[in-house]
Length: 232
Image (tube, rainbow, N blue to C red):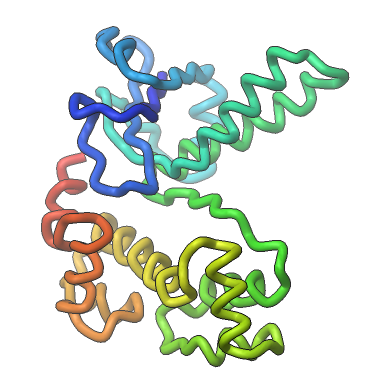
């Protein structure tokens, strides 16, 4: 059983990252309470054998989940709503599309449980912006200038900045910092590297640069973030 909270309440599980929803997974037989009913949420029930078969594609050992907290990208709500809509409409061959969506949701959740959060931000339809997005995804740890990004789409820097902001509602540099922060979060959760080492591997000039970006976006320091997720 997986519960995803998507409402706004101070009683919900702690969620230091605004781009993600707090979630919790319980293995079969683990007692759970019904207090989630007071908050907007999705409760997803996945067949044990199917879940474990898919989970083994990522890890050899199937853990026993005693109400384990994790985070999942907010965009999963769109997929869950689509699944519910498709199920309620029962359109032609809906069983085929529902099965495909169920596979996507299952793997999205497994990756999130393992800390590999699937950020499904929409790729822009604009060629120059999409090229820049792809380049930054692949080279976020390198020194990247807006001029270099604009040249990928053969447009001027001013036009690129304007179109990028219109398409994604953030500047290219804000987008790049977001990618670097996501990579830093993964390293902080899954490695013993120092904060300085994490900063340099993710494209930040120093540990202080990483810390300031962390506090501005996630409202915690890298060290606080690591302590929070080391408890899970």
